[in-house]
Image (tube, rainbow, N blue to C red; front, side):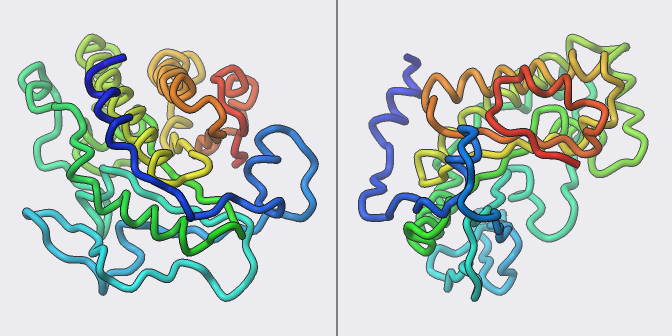
Amino acid sequence: MRKEEVASVAAKPSLAGLGSPSPLSCVPPLASGSPLSCSPKWTYTYLEAAWSDHWQSVEGSLCYSSKAPFSPKPHFSVTCSASSSDPLLVKAARGEPVIQSPIHSEEGLKALHPIDLEKLSFIGDSLKKLRKEVGGDASVLGFMGAPWTIATYIVEGGTTRTYTTIKSMCHTAPHLLRTLLSHLGQAIADYVVFQVEYGTHCIQIFDSWGGQLPPDMRERWSKSYIKEIIDLVKKRYPETPIVLYINGNGGLLERMKDTGVDVIGLD
């Protein structure tokens, strides 16, 4: 076990008294293939941007105030309360992510560093509050972007409809892209574990732009890194269900089933 993992275990937050999902909660039985007693009903919340009135500036970044009112539970019955908390979104809580210094070279890789989970403590606090709010009435779902999807923003500098730069990098600088994706994979795995330790019952990985790759390129540049994340998370929390969603995945379903996920999201 790495020193970081030992520290994580030692600092694992207590979830005592926060409740377990009830039999009506859809995720655990759905992930195991068991029949459901009711149709799943979800409510979806961005921890980063949903409550714009409750954001405060902390060290130059937008952070959700742990002292602000927190009432994600809607006025109707739900079986899942889904909360999105992606580190990239923290940088752009309002609007689309914009990277001021896109990575296009070896020099750019020097700016990468391991994820500092202590700086994301406000997200952990928010997850614990959400877990307490829903009690045993629903499951809490944590969300995370996949390496390829996050890399598109880092390389392109923001949103794009063509993905020209990162697709070119697959051929002109594959070593550079592999290093970036490996770094993101480890950071995402660490962050997923963080979310689980702060109360999420299930994790969904979004590969929003994975569908932009042809199948053979997706196997190499997206799927393999997703599998690494799942392997790392399952070693720590084998009972935590993981959902994989790829935007426009109609032609990729056969290739998604051997990633190690428990549930596939359809589009």
